[in-house]
Amino acid sequence: RHPVYAAELLLSALRQGSGGPAKFEELPRFPAVTRDVAFELPLDFPNARVRAFFTGVKEPLFMGAEIFDVFTDSAGMKIAADRKSTAWKLTYRASDKTLETAEVDAVHSRIVAALEKSLPAAVRR
Image 1 (cartoon, rainbow, N blue to C red):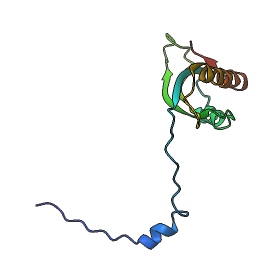
Image 2: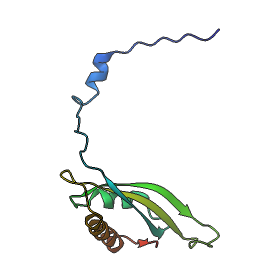
Image 3: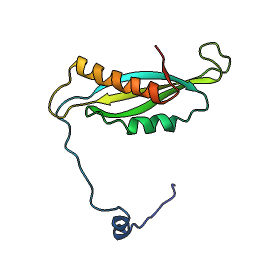
């Protein structure tokens, strides 16, 4: 024997809390291109500030950034004990064509240079 559960959903209440009709976007016709980049930062530097930087980027081909790794080394053997490395996946896409490598590289270089200039970050090479 298994327990039996019952539930009642008030759809009208769900609709009221939804904030309006659903919004849909057309699927992209052209593929995205990603580049991974790792930055060395002070250990106590908030990752949210790096995310805020990426949110403010005004490059037309830049779609966004996603953190996928944080590395620290309390022994200080691979990175200083008071530092951390954060790795990010940056996504680029054009709505009207497939991007060329040189186009992505140029935008990516500008974004990385701007980040190094405005935050206490250094690219890990």
